[in-house]
Length: 399
Image (tube, helix red, strand yellow):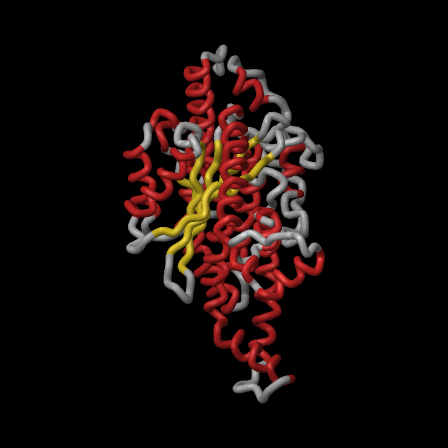
């Protein structure tokens, strides 16, 4: 009974419904339906059993755990709720996710209140010393929240003393960027939606030919964001190593759109790029590291994209910054686990590049990799890995 109620999310008092009791009696007259208090007790026993099983798996797993949170306020009751999900790699090198807490968060939703709820959850599940990153939506209290967490927990358990702890929600950032872009043609979109309603009611306003043309152009542009969101929303495969090159493609696309001959596209791209730049510094560090550790990309992907995004001098600084993060992480790992040691500019081809709006937008990167020459091997293990030739992007490396 308890398992059925959990599976189908039935209310506990279903066992008291006259129709349900009559149905059970028709199946087996001798069956006595339990009370909802008994059902509640059985559900809690199932919860305790499953929690104990998951906690044992967590304790046995030696990897770090990434945490994502999602918080919202119900419309009818005006109550704050927060879902906390863990993501980790199991012993079979498979990506796993577990929802560990769904809790009510009392008002006001200050950083201190949210921090207490989150830290209590982490300590309850013995994850406070295994945390790698914490992905949050992009509300104004996040910076203060991260500082509160770092004060409550031991910084030494985090990567680089917690400097990489905060992760902005990638899908939420894309959503904010698109919403800012759509504001440019908000009135046109309203008129188009109103005209569609003509089939069931008289439209309040009729879209102009310019509205339809703008909608057509913008839909073609925003298809890029739709594809990226679907890619980043994958739940059965890691996405961190895919994020960085794709987000670079978005930034390059926005720069191209700013040079469009159509004023509407220029206005949209300007607003979207402004929002993009607001979050760029928060996302490129740890995502850059994840991509560098992908044997299909390594530092090559940085040498390809950064000169397209920055000046020559700034590109070198950014490449060196992310490489230093990689080295610092390896050194920290080596010290903590007593591992044994961890320890150029590139010229692009003069061959012609493909159309930037083609489906495989990274085909130019493939040409860049093919044009590279081999360099002497460095001394450390990390540099040896980085200096080896990258694998083709279509090779499945089982990440």
